[in-house]
Length: 136
Image (cartoon, rainbow, N blue to C red):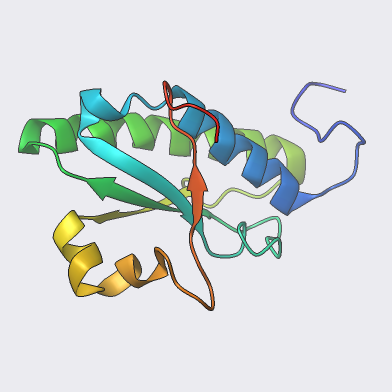
């Protein structure tokens, strides 16, 4: 075992991706990047991800243009690293494993685009705990 496989050795793509999304979130310094919340949506949240599935992240952003640029660069680094790990596990590369959707508080209020997932009754986004956030 190289440390990149799931502990049980099974090719559980959803569980591995969920674990990676939670690790990323636990290292995300929201105030540094102007991020107030982070959510998981899509096939990983639904536990239906396959070997070529990306990880869809919904990021509530309230920062400056500089913070946005830094955030996207930070996430791109994660995306490429996760793609490499996935390729080692599955033999498949998709050019980056993260699909990042930035939304603003106004988008949430107006329920536009991906923001409709936050608090949805039928397919709600799953909150991810960022660095420094308490469990609860």
